[in-house]
Length: 594
Image 1 (spheres, rainbow, N blue to C red):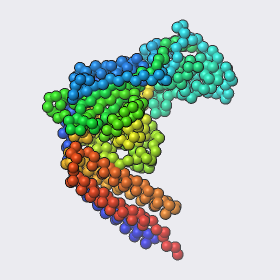
Image 2 (spheres, rainbow, N blue to C red):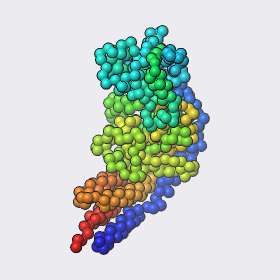
Image 3 (cartoon, one colour):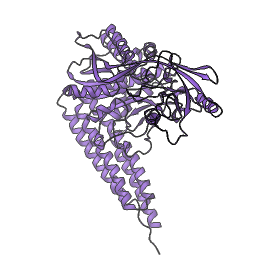
Image 4 (cartoon, rainbow, N blue to C red):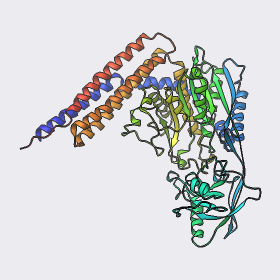
């Protein structure tokens, strides 16, 4: 046992020594980078209008923004009008504006006009109306006759089998998501509608008993039915009534389906030296909520307007690379751009996505997060990394490419937090927003968002849950990253490289300790050691690529000092990595037996 203890002591000392080696390159390198980011952030913070951003959120939330419907396109027109009034036009050289419509003849948009759900028996009472609770009507609901549909509720969750036509003339009532019961309730049972009380647990339905969560129906022309979502409070009421007597309701729905025509708005601040190279800043306009994603759309608008004012009054110069601000249909617009204009799409150097950026975290319970471009934490998730309640999404390993962008975004948030308290973190890649099409194309992208929000996709996602100050903080951090990339000099790139070296040191130190613990606890030492070396190898390779990605940043073409520093950083990382992995070889030895 004494031999084993001596070996462990040696390993622990090796770990400390390795950590010192890795962190040595620049313990003070962070400050210059933070100062460079702050040089952009300080004027932006003063110029950003919280009042105007909040007014934009309030305006957008008035509309049900199903992608390509009249309300969605009206919101696009509102954003375009504000940009035009500020001086973005299709005739401008520096401040350009495009409004583009795409007609998708094989798809349909959905437009709600009026809807109500009323209990008739055993008590006559209005349950929901579109005016008071827009979220209560399921997306994809078809119109009823003008007089509505009067029908008895049938609770279907306890039915093991529903015969063909067994629900004809009735409304299926369920605690499950409406789309999940659609096949048996509507296609087989021929129900005229669905009422669902499903509220995801992340929305804390027992605490938020009056919340209604968003629901969707398949856009099935052969089964033109409607759907309503109800709260946990109404669920308890209906369950109690149905246990004793029949329940009859009347649903009135006025909606329309039309060919889908998606309007997209793009504003550009044209670069002076490399205008063809682009930093994309993106927010989708669809969804119904104030935070999701009126706040992202409003914050992006205020970034564009603030930057123009700062440039016009001489507080900031025109960027060397172009800044492209895009208001889009979530994910689909970026995919169409990639297909329609691939050469233009490939000019994007980085993408910054704003989605649910305005949360008042005291009310929502969310936290500001930077969802990183894919790195090894998306596969091997170990503290301090943690997935959100959203959970792991689809991600092939080929998407894992080292990039400066993750750590640069973290530095920008740290810089903001040096001036005012701000609770933020980074989470591994999960997907589900506009960063996915960029990442799948090999373009680095990060998502600025909040989660877990107890009001996500519910009737509670209203203006009172939005913080104008939080929108400003996120906008300032995101915009400073965009400006840093747009204007990078060789010296700035070197500062970023030094920051990446420090971050690489922290990461390898963290991963080494996790690997050391895993090997100590493993029953099969050699098998576990190989697994841990695979993880450490993945992080080393990722940071090597991240170092290399910095070479693309300077506006000037020849950067001999930077290239030499990148080569030296890679060599040092490789040397320190070998030292660590040699230490893992001795992490555990069998104690001698007597």
